[in-house]
Each structure stands twice: as C-alpha cells, then as structure tokens.
Image 1 (tube, rainbow, N blue to C red):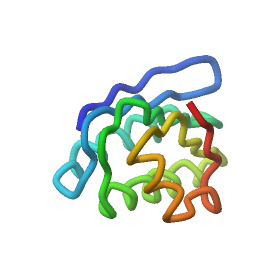
Image 2: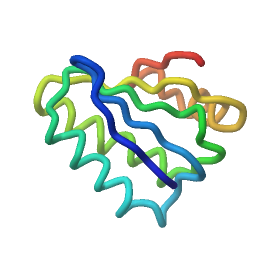
Image 3: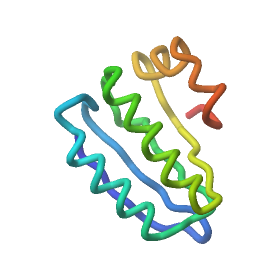
Image 4: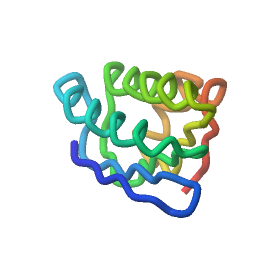
Length: 102
C-alpha cells in the first residue's frame, strides 16, 4: 500500500493505492497520524487506485474514523471500484461512512 495526504481547502485528501491488508497497518497508522494533525472537518479517502482490501484493511478505516470524529470531522470513502467496491458494499460500510462513487 502507498498513500499520499494533501490539503484542498477544508478537506484533507488521503489517496491510497495498491493492496490494503494486515501488513500495511504501520503505513496506514502514519497516514492516520498525518490526517489527525490537520484536524480537517472532511477527510476524503480516495480508493480508485486500491486493487484489493482484506478485513484488517477495512478495520483501519474504522481506526481513522475514530480519530477524525474526535475533532468533529467525518471520513468519506470515494471512488472504490471493482473488487473493493463490492467488499465495501458487502460489509455495509454505507451505514458507517459516507460513500461517494467514482
């Protein structure tokens, strides 16, 4: 997994790519720390370049959401495609996150 964090006005954009799984926890934790430092009201997680995700990867989004909510923000998952889109749908993440289509 690779990531980049950028700012766009009041939004923080987290662009993810590759596969997201258990072994990526340290990398994802760094991304979450960068997001928390910015205290943005909206955190957009770009998923259009993510090829695969497992249950550990999904749980990392919950960790991010917990951190972001502590300062009144929200996490939006954007652009999931193919396999990742199906996984996000199957686990009903729309009940927990705002989901934006590509």
